[in-house]
Length: 220
Image (cartoon, rainbow, N blue to C red; front, side, top):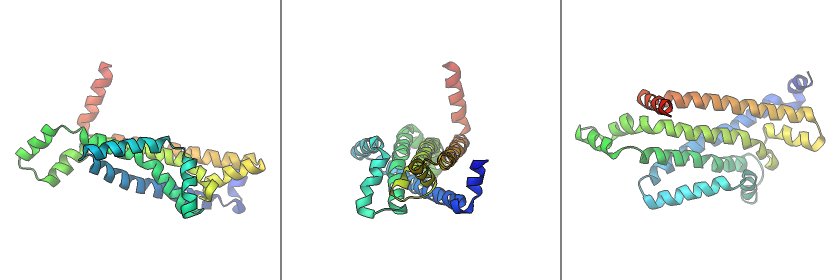
């Protein structure tokens, strides 16, 4: 009952914190998708760029998110903007790598056959490449989105707002009700995002690939 009272108490502004957190995560995920897919497509055309981009992505994933957050503070100060930029940096690598892997994994013979049939570049991109690449891109977005939602609470340390404020304040003043409300809210949102992205990934997977996966599982 104490948790419900905390949520319903206007002074705790639960709806406001929820809106802040959704904006923080939503903007970060959308921008990370745009940048990650674009970079993944660009570097797939050049082996040197691909090597640099993939290794930098791996390095970025190794840096703790709190360190990334603090790096932007001297440049952009405290608040919403540096928090979003740090989360975008966190979210790009899985999308970039999966986009690159998906494009490079397409059999060149399929593209040559499509050209031989008279298909245009746009038709090849939309009818052959996109259906094959989208499931892998969706898998990268799934990983990225869950990471962003789960770690965006740390943005509270630099004034990013959202549920992280409840967690930080709860720890500072030993208010376990506030702490648990923030933690549970983040956990529920992360689960919702995971379930939705899992469904989206399955939806975007062509029927033929689903059959291949089922056969591979059966053989294993």
